[in-house]
Length: 246
Image 1 (tube, one colour):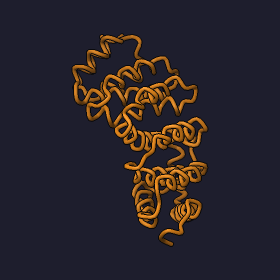
Image 2 (cartoon, one colour):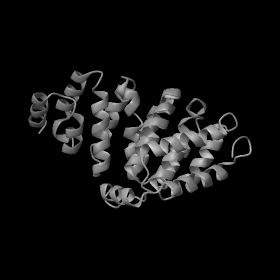
Image 3 (cartoon, helix red, strand yellow):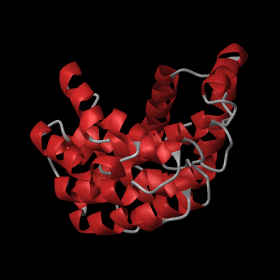
Image 4 (tube, helix red, strand yellow):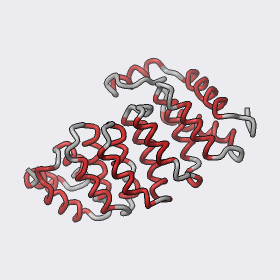
């Protein structure tokens, strides 16, 4: 099957069929233990997912537009298994040069509806797709920052993860630090870990700025967030910051 006649529904059906064929029950059981039973999975490997996504994308390359990829994600994200969601995300990423502004609302809707109801799916979508979206539409930075106040945990986590790749490059650092502060009150371990991850990446281009930030906010920073944030410092600095931020 290849070419112009493949619909998003057709490709989604093929993806699911292929994933079922790759299923590994033993690996799936291990993955469920790792995620503490919060996910469904076929038990496929990351290389298998990337390979399948590349093959499926090749079958529609030159025929599909970004809207077709979004429609594919609508279908695959409704599937319970991690791998179905992952294939949709990878294929969507192939269209990043075509991302429209309307993708902002679409992504928020997917997250708020719990169609990406685990940290792995949220992180892949937001680190890659939303990172690329931000670079294309920097005026959306404030709107993504506002997700930090959303009641849904995945939207909250997405607010931080969307800034990770830009922050790693030294872009949107002011926004990243402001966002980090707004997430300190979140009483959710997965949000706190994402916040610390964002701070760690923001500190890569300017470690002294990160250190000043941590000392300035001290006791307000959840300890989980702090431990993630200081991972790139040397051991002596990490121990000092753990003491001086209490």
